[in-house]
Image (cartoon, one colour):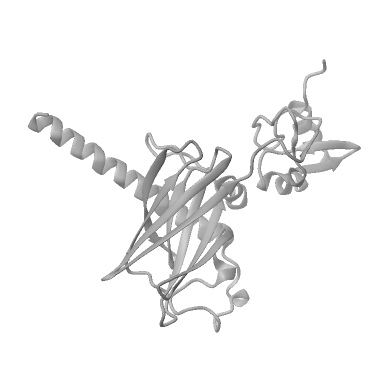
Length: 247
């Protein structure tokens, strides 16, 4: 590769890194707006110095671990849920599409203080055995990165942490449940909120609503709540567009 080609490649790599960083930093602001509870709801006496209280952490807690005296807590945020909760459009930046989830780890040292000055990276082996690496950036007392959990199956996640001279490694499996079990038949073929296609065999029970004797299905967790806020006229119009065509 000649010098000019090397320079172009290096510039492209820097642009990709900046794009990923922008995604994560922007996401951090949206997560704070969408999920942060009122200040009076936080248990400040119980939280580690410098760390967000558990009640203020976005997403769902999926794992707790102890590594060499450090406590690790992982929270996972579904981006569709975030989109609906924040009422802000979630779009791609440049050529990089938005990932399906955001994974964040919170670290507390043996002294009981939050460890926020360091480097964290994730190595993810996907169900099809391909893998990818991503650097987590400091956000709101933790380290977060965007990750795709689209395919069903087991994802083996290795977290590598460098805190000064201290190096930590945590390894675990996160399972995305396989589709096809526990599905409920619904009258609509697309989501009346987003317009997204629904599975032919229905949707899981939590993504349904009963409306005028009909079972209505939705594509993601935020949609049923959005549906509940519509007037009957708005529901009728949305359902009319979303219903399956008559056979």
